[in-house]
Length: 284
Image (cartoon, rainbow, N blue to C red; front, top):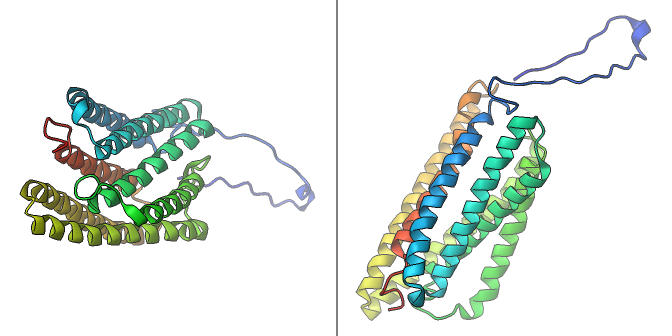
């Protein structure tokens, strides 16, 4: 990090106006040191989504007659993820090449990412409620689920826009904290509702002795529980590392914190794809 000061001690120069331009460049390009690793990271994530997409779409094409609505939703999440990762990669590549953060690409990357996260949370909630597996529709809960999803989308979109569009500052102020709180509260509400619904669905499957579906839901519950535990642990690590790094001395490792959330999200999506992959027995 650099601080640039212009200082003069001559009172005669009080009305002097200095105009100029500074150009800062690293050996690998214009990306700031904290952001430079993201270009390679999103390149790898794009490749990971392509591999997952090949697996999923090949199964989808083979058993398209057996596909049910939930699998269409998973297809949408994978497609959004592929676009999001590719857009982030091109955003950082353009920034690295020109030294100017491309507003248009950033806006699209942020929007695709927010839509993907919103749809993913809504799908997790629908799966937890047993939609398409135990119950054919959500009934009166549909409007509540849609309202929660839309509220989360708006809160997340505003936060991501403020954090990313045109921004290269390492500092975060009170405005960011104000925007983070609604997203955190909505996330907590999603988690609470998901696990409450999962408990009811598991009891229903056990009562009806649907053992194959029960086994799938137990694996799904375990994957979600591990994800939540790891998330809480990582949040504690984030708080600890930030409190012990007041002057940003650990800037080389700063990229790992947001990158971890992308990897964790992808891991959960991968598990869901394995559990609910299209097959000749999907409909049954």
